[in-house]
Image 1: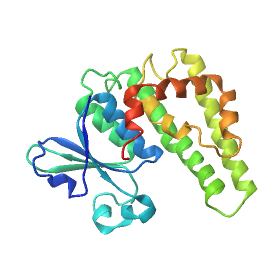
Image 2 (image 1 turned 180 degrees about the horizontal axis):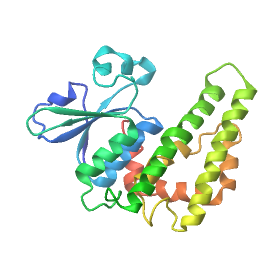
Image 3 (image 1 turned 90 degrees about the vertical axis):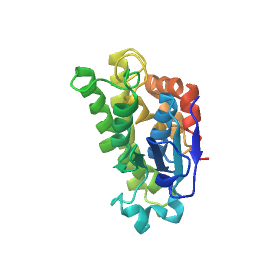
Length: 232
């Protein structure tokens, strides 16, 4: 079982840490959970620097120095010589981690293969569609002044996209989006689709039987359960 270490010190200069090693600047949001889920599945040791987004830590100058967009998660990969490679955007981090650690391609696919491009398709689907639309639904439901037009717009678009996932899972027929096992194509979306008690979402998603079964299947994996608890 992998080990993860939470640090509040400068995480790319941890005394006693044996390079190379990854440091995740992250928080317990759907985007942040993607990378800790994958790290747990890969069985790698890693460090976590909690970035409390409610305190706008991600907007502080030191963070913007390597992540101009001021969002989590970020990855600092400390090389053997002490130099640091920074990677931002959750899907890019997933691809970096699989290239570094998933040599047997248990959770990803070999670049250049047809399955690799299917994997990319569903990564971009989440980043460009499902995440932004579900995020807007969250915002207008929880944080913004009541606006039924906006809530309905983003709710309906979220479920249109869930319908796309439903058809894909039905067509693929394996219980996963690509091939017949969990990969980053699944990891990128499942944290966004967990039940959250907003409006009728919890009941409505159960109508998409393939999607609902897929979510439950992924969430039951022990490594996924561990990843969902990081950072505490």
